[in-house]
Image (cartoon, rainbow, N blue to C red; front, side):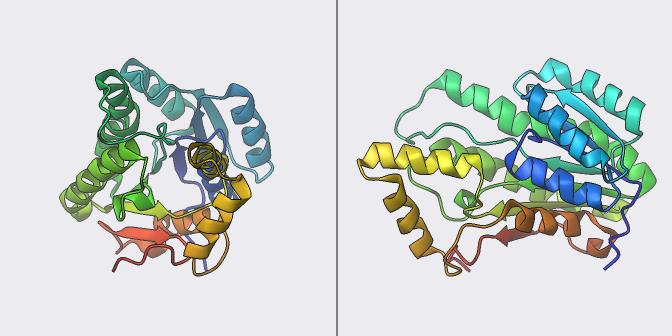
Length: 261
């Protein structure tokens, strides 16, 4: 299937590793120029080297999403090197494990800025040019916790749910201009984040990590964790011309984990 996005430009947040780097690689294979944003300069440079092997242009931004003052400068640099951004993959990484009954205002406000406000601000700045060109893709990476809240992940459950409501509202506003907005929900995808959460649960419950993994696998009909590339290919499809009539949707990539309709 020809995705029709060769020569487009994508801004991939959280591109130091995990889901972000997988999405960047899959898009690069489709001929998309990539702006890599993340906090690990060494990882970004290594990923950029891999992407250039696909004949695309890349730019790297060491970007702290918690710092709102960095947004305009990074976007100017990206657009100066690669031109207007056509595709935004809004992947902000995960906050620390947390209980809903424990409220630390400083932690919540910091995570709200990096996980929610940053995505809204970046999108708002990119939308006018997308609407003018009558092509734009905003893809928000969420969590299965927005469908079925995950114990001990109160921050993630609450803040990602905020983005889901915002994305659904935005999708209706910009649909007439050829801009689509979709939320992609990963299940247990095998990334460093998932391994860290498994380790944290093992420590909290006093069992072995392998026992935690076995418990998770028992809940997944496919019986395994997902490959980041499997998730990334769904994102690439939603970013393509082929998905021009898909907007305001929540797309699950979870191996059947979520039992909710």
